[in-house]
Image (cartoon, rainbow, N blue to C red; front, side):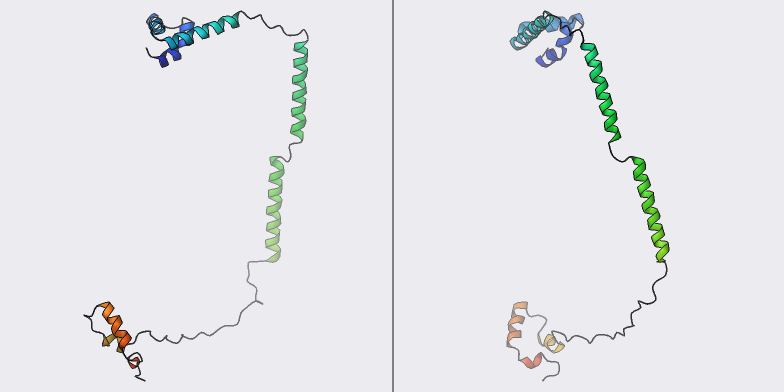
Amino acid sequence: MDCRRFRNQHLGFMDNALPDEEISGMRRHLADCADCAARDTSIRRALLIFRNLPAVQPSPNFAARLNSRIRQLNNAEQLASLHRGPSLGSFVAAAAALVAVGFFAVSAFDWDEPSRGLALEPVLATAPAPAAPLVTSTYVTSASAGTPVWSAAMFAEQVPLHFLNADGR
């Protein structure tokens, strides 16, 4: 038997509600474990003190005062329920009114047909002018395909400017 199992079964041990083999195992554990023995002793002493306390006697008019207080709380709860605010029915009525106003607004303004007064004049569009290429075919053909990129960049710095213009001007 371990301490956890002893603590879990301690209530049944004190009430003699466990089987005989469990009770004998609990007694052996009490003899072996000082912590569980101290816990058992303190619980038994607390129960002995509690059982020897005098019984509490309520005052003679305790029942009448208790019933009066319960009635006051019930009355206060009923009054509070009257002032809790709008109910579900009022929210449903407000939603129905909002739907009705929306329906009348749509039918009054006749938003099904487009307005004829707001037509824009047609705009004729032409194709945009082609953009001038950044690199012309003359420049591209002047560099050989086997040249590494960095040497092509060095070569591009030394090329005369007339290679960049397709017209040669």
